[in-house]
Figure (cartoon, rainbow, N blue to C red):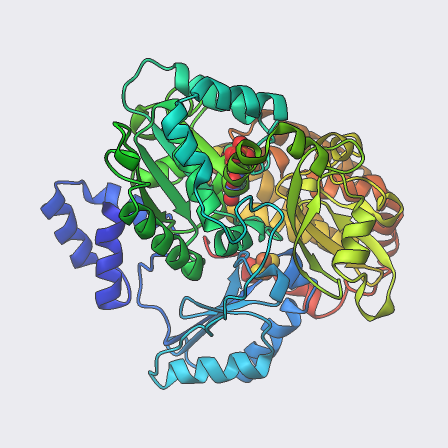
Length: 572
Ligand SMILES: Cc1cc2nc3c(=O)[nH]c(=O)nc-3n(C[C@H](O)[C@H](O)[C@H](O)COP(=O)(O)O)c2cc1C
Ligand code: SF4
Ligand code: FES
């Protein structure tokens, strides 16, 4: 409960004063160093009094492509001369509004599609001591193919399952459907559930991973807004099948509206007897609660997320053992992504045959994808798995903005690296994207037009990993900084060819060391963006490093020379 205590103190004082932390330590018999280690880890907590207007400009991929650098520079100009106790401007990692870039947070409230003028107005309000509130977004009615209930009665699969208790049949159907995890790693869901089901331990947990903090990833935000009942039904089914009696929905703190929607739906379920003791009059129990993340991309890594729920620093655990064996509070735990959970009632309600036929070109099921960057209609789209990327970018997302040409796209945020326009016919599918040297990941398609500098984009991605590294293991903590330094140097002016060759050899060594020896996926995948750019856009890098030329005229400008120190994100 340490986060509740810290939040209460922060609410009272605006930050965490030392005396209050000492008091908390005494009251709870927790060593002060432990409280401090947690408070200093999470971006949500302030150890010093923040400025009256804390302006944080999202610096990640989709916002970077939509003028975040220029926005930050203009805000710095507008507030030039303001004392630091009044205004502080700095970068922040992805705020989950990639379809409405650029996004900023002002005093922890998020504003999307902002221009310097509107951001200045909000910040001046904060300076006058007035409260700043996020704009209220109207919830439209949206019909999704993924919803098996439409206007009819919901939770039908759960109702039937409580009667039939056909737990093995659920596992068999998920296995035949070949449902894989939608959080990034694509692990077979039936295997994960089966592992937990087989554990002899009587206490087990179900966790829904709604941390969604990778740049470009916004699909879970949409799913939680429009299909909350399917997320909850999927979690209850997971509990009944595996024998877990308690579920926790872990949501990023920037998703306040979704937290409310889910909270309301959970209350309805308790009221209707779908959650709680004796579900629908049976002897089955399952309780569900929401846990709001104190922040940070690393919290999405499953074992780091468990550490966060337990009240520790979100540092990933060594694996094995896997959470299915030893997870939350050392008990067997099912952890799945939001979209994975909603696939379960879909498959069980309509049958495996229906699921198989929803895909295109030999793939199975439907997929929610977020498309952002230089497209005319950024947003979240529900498409058949297997749809060619060309169709998603040009048909669903309206093609490239301003009549420009497509240059590159990341199939799933920085982790997937960048593919060139010539590969735009690749299908949205686990196997097809892996064969293309990329990954389906979490379906976060970020699109770059012809004006984009790919070295700049690789630097942007590695900065993100550097900023978000939890620092637990050396290869990632030191390697991501070294990689950032090296790429930054390449954007600053020509270097001798011999030095370039040495840099390339060092980059390869670093990449290998990081991918093979980092504890978790963050450090393992951090080299992907630059390696993909070296593979597909090598001439562009050569021009920077050997000739001091940026073919896209992005680098070698005063803005691109901003010192690295100023670009450190939220966890300095
Ligand atoms: C750094 C990092 C961040 C991650 N963030 C998320 C996330 O926000 N949401 C998510 O579902 N999975 C995330 N994952 C993957 C999870 O560790 C885990 O594989 C996933 O939640 C399992 O669910 P699934 O099998 O349904 O995909 C992340 C992994 C890493 C290494
Ligand atoms: S790889 Fe990076 S993020 Fe993962 S445990 Fe190591 S330091 Fe932390
Ligand atoms: S909100 Fe800026 S990249 Fe996601």
